[in-house]
Length: 289
Length: 289
Image 1 (cartoon, helix red, strand yellow):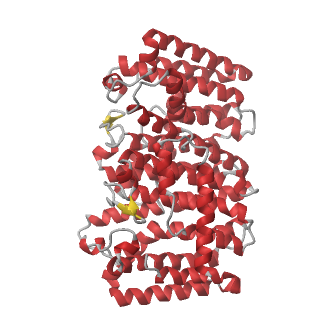
Image 2: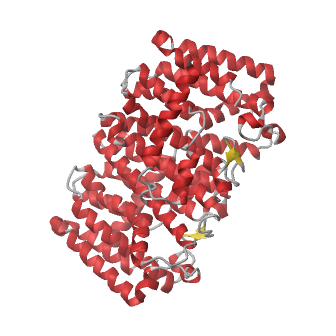
Image 3: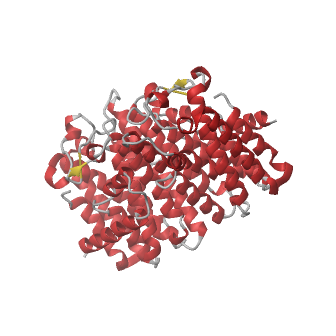
């Protein structure tokens, strides 16, 4: 069931991304925006659509924050892959934007996807109540900015030249910013749109985000580059502290499983209606890419 | 009078930028954000504060969009200066961010300033009516994105490899995106916040934006690098079409003056109350930096 929900979310957000970019000029930067925002697991879009469904939000409204988060996620990947950042040539099994075009196009396409994300949550079609749109916007900005995702990135860079490898506490804070903040925003969207309590989804998402990153670190050690769609083994090679280096492979697996248990438990106020989100949590630690 | 208004706007927005960044972690990326958003003429902030004053908006609210537009403007400069873009080592007379730190820090600091701009216009302190905040956000996104500022940038890059230099019509469209869109947003803020007609300020701003860019092209030919604070003569050297190359120095000056006349005329519904904006228009074509 979950796999078909995920595929459905992916198809819907893919189509909507193409629609919102349809009227843009036919320029390399716009082609690169389309290329960079195509494909991927669409886990964040799925979380948005599913948390919206849980709260009875119209799917034609929910598609806007789903598109927004995928645009922001795509921008972050394009900039992360740049030679001056992670210098990755491969993403989702395809050449990265700066390889296929050039660095300048990658910087600009990332910038335009970044702006597009904010446009999607502030457009009137997203929700009839402007207070909801303003709430989605301000929370998205906090999740993406210098106290969220960019903070995580900055801590990651600082770690590269730090005299000591990071502690478990430090790496947890880093990852809470780098991947956790956007995942938490995605999972809470439905509650924000329905003006309901975000606490259960917030707890679910914090567990999920951390489990996701632990699984990523496990994949970096055990994964198959062909399936993962990007280079593996880079962290160990660079001598970076990861959840695996700090907890061991078994310790990391156990921790991820405990987090998924807690994530599922957090959804109890929703009963069976939240089963797709529970499956998503299990998927996150069992995926091979 | 105008110079003191501009200085006052600059001081207020400078102080407010420091306040909104005060709680951020002490990291190179955050230092770079502060560095990149310090200084400058603050013309955009001035336009925001002045158009807000014209419409009786509380200055404590108007400071938020003023800070937003300066954060967005600063992000665009940091990314523009990157080696893969304009490759500029000097900005406002100081080393650019990638020279003082490195490219990675410049990409991230620009990204975080970009997000900060959207946070500033969606925060509740900006305006009590969330419909106004949502309107400021969506118009800012349109002005900054792939159909506004980034479009201008992309057209500029495309022009570098085009077989023919740009026509006057093409360069006007390019500049309307590259610098015009954010200037127009700034000038219209007061009317948006007061839910008043934006048409007079829109016409004023379109004239002003174009006059500003013509003046920039004139400075690139005639300016003193020490005063301008960045390299001059780059456009002619690169064989790029500019308003000066297309209209001649006298033709460009005449056109800029006619635009300023029309900009001042557009403000007639506001009477004398708009004199500071009229002075701003005259300043834009008489500045030496």
